[in-house]
Image 1: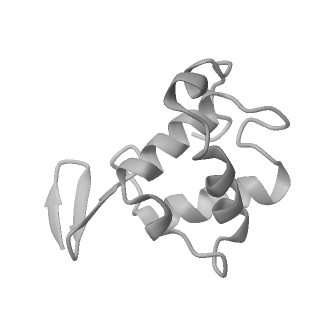
Image 2 (image 1 turned 120 degrees about the horizontal axis):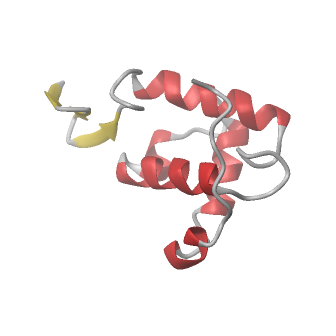
Length: 100
């Protein structure tokens, strides 16, 4: 594994570490836990939290990072949210994360 700033290269796949603090596997599990409780990361409506997370995942390898077996809610969420254009995602309301 080769590290570069807040990125790691794993067998040619670049993954982003959330805030440079957590391994991607922990970040995926955090997102999965949130999506077990709500349809979207900001609650019942799409928000900047969804926009930021989809951009993070797409930059880090996208659907290749996810599994419907280990992260079923995140996999389904990604399948839906990734269909929205970047322009439309920019229009989603700004929201601060409830998690530190």
